[in-house]
Amino acid sequence: MTKNLTLLSAAAFVLINSSVQAQTPPIYSWTNLPKIAQPTFRKDTVNILKYGAKADGVTLNTKAINAAIVACSQKGGGVVLVPSGLWITGPVELKSNVNLHLKKAATLLFTTDKSQYALVEGVYEGKRAARNQSPISGINLENVAVTGQGIVDGNGDVWRAVNKGQLTESQWKEKIESGGVLKDDGKVWYPSEQFKRASVEGKSMLLVAGKSPQDFADIKDYLRPNLVVLTNCKKVLLEGVTFQNSPAWCLHPLMCQDLTIRNVTTKNPEYAHNGDGMDIESCKNFLIEGCTLDVGDDAICIKSGKDEEGRKRGMPTENGVIRNNTVYNGHGGFVIGSEMSGGARNLFVYNCTFMGTDKGLRFKSVRGRGGVVEHIYAKDIYMKDIAGEAIFFDMYYFVKFATDGERDERPVVNEGTPVFRDMKFENIVCNGAEKGVFIRGLSEMPIKNITLANMVLQTDKGVELTDASGIHLDNIQLITKSTKPVIFVDNSSNLTFNSIQYNPKAELLFDINGERSQGIKVTNTDTTKATTKASFNKGAVEKQLMLSAAK
Image 1 (cartoon, helix red, strand yellow):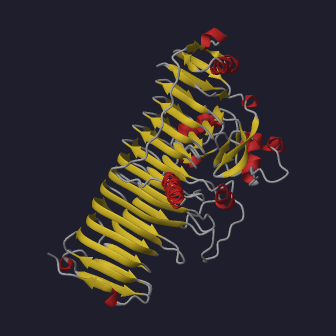
Image 2: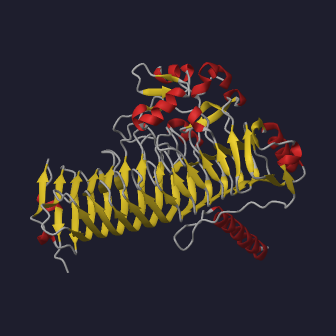
């Protein structure tokens, strides 16, 4: 009997231990990157021509394309082929087990007739909102793809407002002649009077209790759709296609799992308001590789919901690999925020080039967002002609959103306090930027434990750290136009500067400010090259700066 009990206990221990191990999430690293499952499709091919589609640039092919997709899915899936040609269409709804394949020289051009786009429930800037139906969409699908070498064009110019200052004289004249209306001061063009009224009056698009999408018919023209929205889908592939001229965001995978975006081009005019390249929101296990982005807002952007609604959703964007991408115009090359209330973690960014973006690596949030962003890694990042900062963290992102609601902005730690911590960026070269590194946390929640290593930053200004803790700079060469100071510190603690190289005869190496600035260590750095090693202001004390002799 005792022997049997012992055996049962041992078996139970093995079972419980196995269950615990099975539930333990993997620990990701550069040698153990997240793995992304790929979709598979039958080879059976359905040509949209069979369903009456015409590539004459006039015929509306919405019914033909959607009929082909439905028929293909109902037969077990396969490929829906869009041959070369100019195909005018309304909204296209994807289905499970279908690969919508655009041949080279095939263009899906979405109609400018906005009556073709139904009012639907959507998610925009992290919150439930009324929207026009997206040109391409899919909900609760598995094994779904848009591939090929063709173009998906959202005809975004008919949807977007634009400021006069964003266009040349001839572009502005052309815009006015196309129709639409002007703001009373003549400085903004709107697609319609309805759009103008909603914008000027600050109309809300949020779907609050008791509201349905149809209740927003009086501002329908204002509710610009994202070009491609895939919601709660598994095994998604976007490959080879050019997605351009989106009314709002270009690519928006939402709550998807096992997502691959490969060799895709996203293209929007520089003046495209909210013209993001790709916004990966609350997705798990994803790969973005070999893509080219040239857009009007953030390029590759990580999001996870906004404020209380995002925290309730509780779905971080996690386990992602972003590699071998090139970004031209954009507000940021790789971005997290500001709608990141569900958090983000285990993201690996490498072998990427940013050419002329506003910022390079960009992290942004604000009091009231909440969410934890952690375990973010970047290496082998190459930047040129960055308008602002090469590496940028800011917890004071003050921008008025159409989806804004009430949020707690008190300087206290609560569920609305954003947390950014535990990241490492290495092997980064930047040739041209306003500032090399800018980190600004909150007084109640500093940005914590960020390691920056092996960098050459040629910038106007060097490094600025405010309300930061556990920041480590190792083997950083700062080639700056301004050297007063090279490094600015304000109320930041437990900082390490190892092997810092800077301009000979720099006016001031360290400008230390604030009584909370403490535990600042400088090692393997020749501080004698600077005219003045350090200044201490606003309560900062000299003993908190610890200098070790250079080797």
